[in-house]
Length: 406
View 1 (cartoon, rainbow, N blue to C red):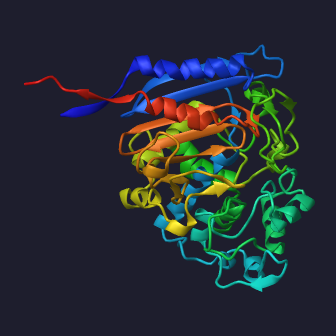
View 2 (view 1 turned 60 degrees about the vertical axis):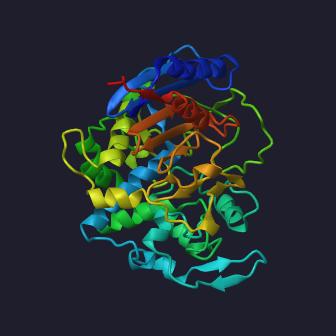
View 3 (view 1 turned 90 degrees about the vertical axis):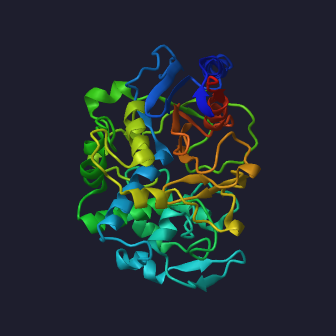
């Protein structure tokens, strides 16, 4: 008999790698935490959280999650499906009528009628046909950029979704995986169903029972000092030309696109949350076993199994963003799912999954091995694959340990 064991000597490579990245000024600060069978096996931090690089990273540092907001919003939708208030095959137009009249903008510049209605499953799996501002060679993305969607953090969620409904889709719903504003539209559906602003929906159903006391769409003024400053090479809505091979520690001010408070009006589905490593680790526990820390179930066992199944066809895999593929990965109902390790370029395993954020935040959950990890930094448009590299290093510490012979 053999069991998997995390070897401390190999885990040291996490710190070594993070230190090299800080010394070569690829990032200002990096923090990480790994859990195995429900126990924190290692955590650490290095570097600084401010532009002057004098304030060290700490356990209570607040990070802009960007797209790591998506899995949280998706889980709230799954809870509503469990109570019969929503269904995977519900047409989006049932809740947001403006989506009934959308069309598809073909590569030749022609408008085409929908073959079928966009559904909630399309939103959850990013097969809605919606795009993102930063995606290259996408005519629909050009329209988003002209409308300034990513740049305007003062735009209400309702108005953002209204503008999206006025634009054509990039593809027919269900036809391909294409990253975009799907979770923002999903978030507004949740608001309609719950008859509450998104922040209140999430607070009552997830943040409070999970003990995520530092997670939300705004940060009170007396806590602004805890928020890590942003570095980066491009704004959120700026097209990534993929030409950079290294990072430059250029200070960025993202207050307009990702405000700290905005009088409580800043809410999104695809981005927007602030959180800490301990808070997000609590959410990762929910994705592992479906329960709050006190044992109260927040997702049923069948739903938990369902959300971890890859829902993409072979033709729709692997997922890719802006021409960059994620080999071996499909998509479940909350994030990426490793479906074909024979194609993977990252150490992983069947069923491992999670997601990442534009500012170099990253997490994974491996239910089979009861192994999860979270990496946090604040760098927009990184040319360095921080999360994937730290995941591979972490998996490199997971080894067989033979039991003693009888």
